[in-house]
Image (cartoon, rainbow, N blue to C red; front, top):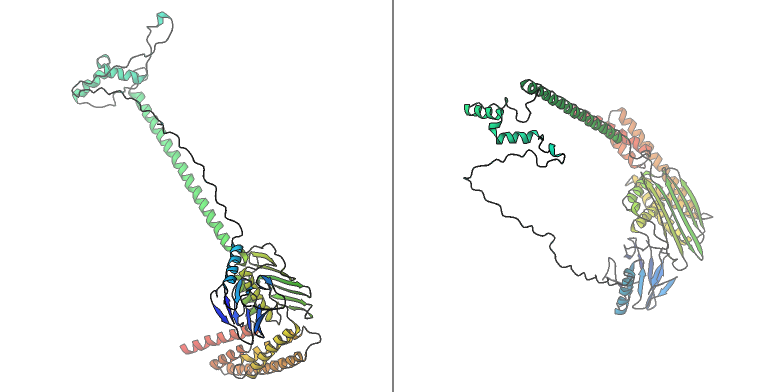
Amino acid sequence: MKLHFINGPKAGEKFELGPPGVSIGRETDNDINLLIGGVSRYHAKLEPDGDGWLIRDLGSTNGSKVNGQIISGSYNLQPGDIITLGEQNICYGEKQPDASQKAAQQEKTILNPFPVINPSPSPIVTPLPEKPLFQPIEQTPRQEISPDAPEIIQPVPQAIFQPIGEPEKLNAEIPISPVAQTVNDMANPEKNENIKSFFDNLKKGETSFVKMNFFEKNEKGSGPDSNTAAHKDTKKRKFSNFLFYVLVIGAAVIFVSIFIMIQKTNEKKTIQKPVDKRQPGIPLLLSYSKQITTPDNIFNFFLKVEDGMAIFTLDDIKSQRHYSKTVKAVDKQFLENLEEKIKGTNFMSLQSESPGAASGDADNTRKLIIGYGKNLNDITVKNTFANSSFEEIEAAIDEFSENYGLRTISLTPEEMRQEADKSFAKAEQLFLNYDAKPENLREAIVRYKITMEMLDQFVPKPEKWNIARKKQQEAQTILDQKFKDLKFDFERFLKLNEYQQARDVCSQMMLMMPPDSKGYEQIKAYKLNLEKKIGSKNKK
């Protein structure tokens, strides 16, 4: 019997079913690994049942569906059934046309729930009859003048309009402007002595215009003296104007220079001020809660990470787990891994969506608050699919919690014991091979502690908890003795000025200590100083 993948990254692929069964989920250790939205780490499992197969949900977040119906417990599959896990659709058995069409139609309905409405036709606009905006102006033909004809200068009339008054005053002399008078004089040079003398001088070759002033009346006060005074006044006026412009431009330049200096000073002050008001080195703030309510169980998990401290709370009524733990100093490596994975997502740009309906009898609520620097976001997901960034952070929280023997999913007591057995077996393997790799001894101690923390949730504690505790103490005693011997060798080589041997001892000591501990940093500093001394000695 085969599975046919209808959509997603595996669309068109087939998978042959075979005993003892097939597990499906997001983790890589599943038989079928599905990296698609809505699929849990261990989502469902297909198991043989006589001549057929049945599907069983593994406590997934979004549940498992067959032909659009959520299943509870196990379900006997029939050829052509459509299995829905999150956003993934899978056809069981030979691929049936009806099933494919049904799934395609279902996707089409979801993607386009609204009917297409034809737009209303545009109204027909009748153009207005064309009409010229301007009427041409008839131009009168110009009268051509022969180039040989003499130029005639018409005298400017003394008065165009005569004032209305008494008859005896109509013939009185009317004053005209200086310009009109000058043009009149030019037209009748014989009537004006100044003009006549000008033409006489022009015939003699004297072309000085300084002596003549056509635009001033020959009245009292006119003449060479008055012209000289006016010329001096003009020079003074020009000098005053020039001095004024210089002062204005100089003041503007000074003002602009001062403004630029102030701006540069403010920019330097802004750069010197820290952008983030929070003190450097403060780790991120994370608060995560997950609650799943079913008719027979209430599962609640809570994690808070702040200021390098972590608080865990877990309540699982079905498995009788009630656990609370505070880690005052979180492992630096664990915290850096968690922060790096969070910053690699788009969580800060997400927005909360409206809650959905409960899936079957299960009510699922997840809340995540994250802040670092000036960034802060609060997202709640209730009975609906979570964004991929949200699920990536949940996976990072699962990994972080497993370092302290906790799981963010509801497990039965038997499943909890199986997880503890796996951790204990790994610790035993590392403990037996610590001679080959000194760091194995440190890793074995960590695994023994995880086993104890997982079994510590049971009341009373199982026997394996006591075995793991004794093994952890034995491994710690060996580690302390080895470290003591290496410290003695280090001090001896240092007194003998055997810097290379002392440096090699530092490297062995660093393998036996946690990388985030103060002792590790101290030995690392010793090693760097020894390398400097070795380099100076080789130069000599």
